[in-house]
Image (tube, rainbow, N blue to C red; front, side):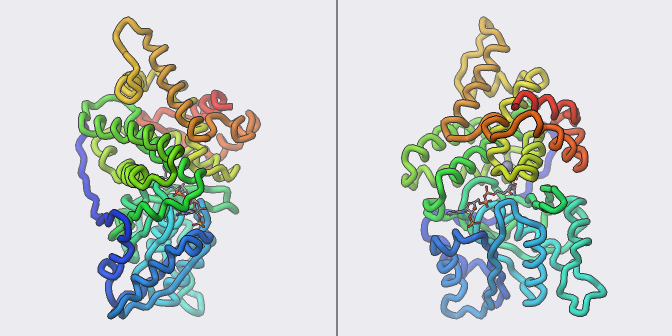
Length: 404
Ligand code: NZQ
Ligand code: ZN
């Protein structure tokens, strides 16, 4: 196991009916900007529930709203939210939604103070400074507005981590960022809020969480027994509960376990002290940026082919994955290649059972889609990916050719 520091300050408030806790969690005299997406928060009544809690008896809060944060949150939209933060002296941002709203709100929290010196009112955020912040992973930012979250879709783990991903369509970029200042002060995880999700989004969430675990597990052994055992458990829960929720979408107990598993998949715990890959995600981001494919679906397209392309460097963990997650016997009589291929096929079948694509063709793309993706990877500096930093553009190209 490698050296590590583990720190996660997020208070999780889990369970049915917990949105009312907002009246105790958000400072009583805060100037709160509620951020949300394209309409589900209003339609499902969650936004009203949030506002009722914030305006509870005795509240001195001023509450503002900013809606319309897109799936794969757009930089240009978020700049308007950041201007609004300044215009209203907002000192607390409350994200109501999924990874897109939470990531977008984290970014707003980080860049809203980057105003233009020479604009008549200093409320306007400098788009250039904000873009520079994003392209430098927001590493240099040393102040942020406090943030809380009400999670409505279990998938990304954004509710309990300090990262995010921002889309900038005009620049054909979808870029990750991370800054410890964006750990939410709290996140409310009410599983009943996920019952209104379309099946597509439920399946996306299971797959995204699954691949998050894989990115932090399927590398090479460092004798990290806790992280490995924990990761394998999360994978097995996602396999069983992913199938269960497809069969019984209204089973709240299944929803509870999926919600908590998705959060634990990317809150830093299983990634502490172990090598991490993230190649699947970096290639996936370009697929979303170029073809607007749902984030999770880009991952299920890439992962099986990445497993095959990198089966030599990942052999030990692929065999461990086969045995401990898929219960495939790895006794010496068996041919290791056959065991690994069986584990990859089981992974593909799991994704297919959830109705997810496992090839570019499943997304109506062919080999002609590969060159532009490779160009984007190069433009975004994604040229030495993976746990050994050895996945160059040629490796990414071969992964995509396998996925064609
Ligand atoms: O926009 P609204 O109307 O709210 O609809 C959303 C959206 O269309 C809908 N939805 C959310 N909750 C709902 C609901 N519909 C009905 N009932 C509900 N309760 O679902 C759609 C997808 O929402 P989105 O937030 O985009 O989904 P997800 O949580 O999967 O987030 C995806 C984004 O997160 C980023 C991805 O790149 C993508 O931009 N990621 C963030 C990560 C992080 N912060 O750690 C890591 C991930 O790997 C990922 O990259
Ligand atoms: Zn993801």
